Length: 203
Image (tube, rainbow, N blue to C red; front, side):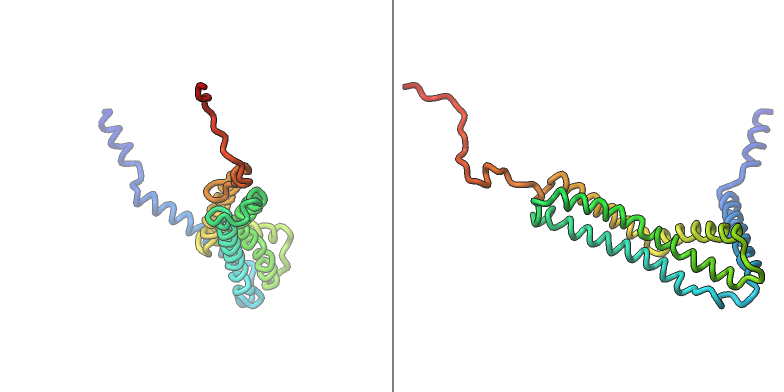
């Protein structure tokens, strides 16, 4: 009986392919619900008031901005770290690099969030009836959630994250005076004679 119960339990469990199909169906249903909400609100031709190019440009602009900031941080941190340039200001440069490196991570997020305002306004302008505040909030939340996923997974937001993390890590190395960012010893810099410690020779 125990073998029969085990075989029954194993037979009732879905296989990997069935589990993937269930997940795909759930994602498809979510996409259909989101699309039905948008098309239910819009009764005119889709895209008549929605500037899709501006929406895409806003997403790409955030990613490109984060990538540019990350590259600048890496170049700036490499000057004292690899070349010894401006190493006397290493603490200040390192602190600035950490802040800018973190900023590079969130610039794509700002682009995704900022692009939702004109997008929702365009949908409400195409609506048969004016959008209520609740509908605008729901559309804004949906747009922000999808925009964040899209900007970091598809529109090269991940590259901004990689460069920002590398730049912030180099900035930490500059603060810790690693490699050529290490300051020179003041005694060696002033040319002081070395001090020899030892026992005096007997007379």
